[in-house]
Figure 1 (cartoon, protein in one colour):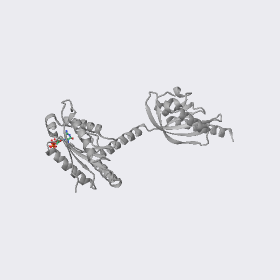
Figure 2: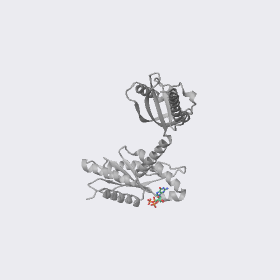
Figure 3: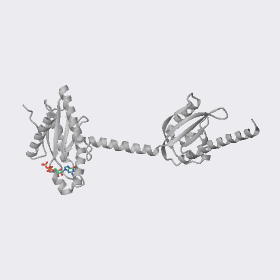
Figure 4: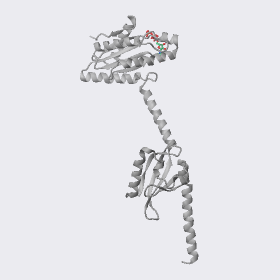
Length: 312
Ligand SMILES: Nc1nc2c(ncn2[C@@H]2O[C@H](COP(=O)(O)OP(=O)(O)OP(=O)(O)O)[C@@H](O)[C@H]2O)c(=O)[nH]1
């Protein structure tokens, strides 16, 4: 080889090195190289910019500087295992990291093991910021959870809604049918509720419905379900409870509801209830019997509980 061609080769190698350096400098993804003990040896501008540190603030620091305290030990161990392990590439993984200003962000990191000019292993890590995508995913997840919740619950009171409540009733009836256990349902409706809306406004009416839901719930067993069928009409499912016990429970609830003052106007609210217990009936039949009993309670002057007679 002539001296000219050696020069030329030297130039080419230098150019190639400069190109590589420029690629690393201008790469849109953060790149860092850590020594065998996890200390930063190289960080590119995108890495510094992402974390909010200057290059000289990072070089020589342990990489766990950008890791939340809770994961530091785990990350340190993973780094050491990778440096001394067999794998040359570390799988892509999501991590939560901390920027200089304390901000938490999410990255996807992928790493490779390279050999330094001292013959020792180094870890080169490539990071991509996915914070926005994660936040979007989180908001989407919350929106889906909310939709899922609303599909089963009444928004005002947080109770199960009619559709979900009727499904629960079907399940309860099925269990009673199979195991021969008693089951009672209570249909109740507030008395003269229209007066409250007309006198104090709809939002006061709403507050009454919310507070009343709590009063009733506090009186129920863990295994009972309270459902808002619609408007000011509610259903309670009481599995394993016979008609007499349901009446005692409902009397207690009726009295508690009537005794409680509602809203800042200290309103009195009463309810009329009809009870039906399970006797080889469909949910429609049971609801129908409870409804008739409730109607009787209204007819008899309201603020009372009536048990539906057993069908012959
Ligand atoms: N504030 C509020 N009112 C509601 C809601 N749903 C239904 N209502 C009201 O409940 C009232 C029901 O009136 P009615 O069906 O005449 O019954 P009532 O006045 O309770 O009379 P009785 O049932 O016969 O004792 C109406 O004024 C409805 O507008 C609600 O979500 N919020």
